[in-house]
Amino acid sequence: VISAHEWQVIESGVAQRVTALEAFLDDIYSREGEIPRAVHEGIVPWRLIASSNHYHRAVTGIRPANGVRVHVAGVDLVRDEVGTFRVLEDNVRVPSGVSYVIANRRAMANVFPEAFATMRIRPVGDYPRMLLAALRAAAPDGTKDPTVVVLTPGIYNSAYFEHALLARMMGVELVEGRDLVCSGGQVRMRTTTGDRPVDVIYRRVDDDFLDPLVFRPDSTLGCAGLLNAYRKGNITLCNAIGTGIADDKSIYPYVPKMIEFYLGEKPILHNVPTWLCREPKDLQHVLDHLGELVVKEVH
Image (cartoon, rainbow, N blue to C red; front, side, top):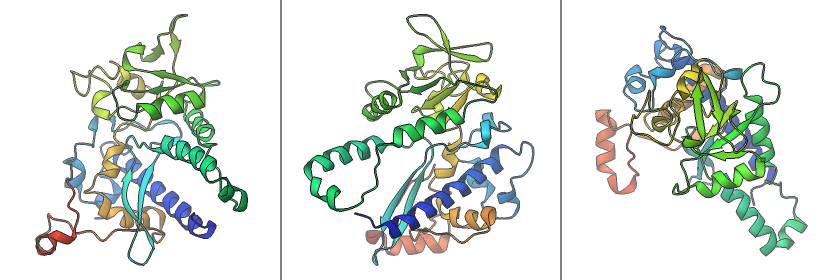
């Protein structure tokens, strides 16, 4: 059980980190035709952004509802040798895993009821309600009663259990790409009673498969014309297209600098000590200590 004091540090540190990543995404995508501030000030090298598979120029200049691109974030934490929490990696593309937290909590409450009777353990069962509220708040401007759907790649996806669980607990439709149709810049959902307009898509499909007209032409997991509707502001995608640049392994070492640059604050949660193999000095250190390190691929 994590103490309330320890959790307070984690909570504030994660919020700070995601806020900085949000500012970074706004910096590189909203400033069409301009050099991002972080690049101009030497915080992040432009070549790392431009060469990443997760940087999508197709969404440059698009500012989503409320200016939010990261509606759900999954930040991986580890303890170091003295027990201090550190950030191992950021996940802001299509983070998954919360369904297992909910399912595990139910199982633990049944197996260890005395622990929950003697300690004030914070609940996690209200997550679907909070998620639905966040998704509805992200609806395009002027939408009074937004329709939210969960977009899944289908039953063969490893996280399908989570997609179905969250859709059921939020009380929204679980759809596949073939259930959606785009026309005139509007997204509609096929139902047994006819097509219904869709305002918010909580997508669990990677960027490259969302719209075959813009990304992978062989994809059947998304919906043709989705990006056009997104560009017109008629649909909100959660998380937004292009957020993957913020969780690329090559960007991770620069997040502490982002926090200081965008927020004017010192990082509450620190990174795991990291060496950049593109730097000759760091590369030599990695080669000398290869048996003690984890080497990660960048994109």
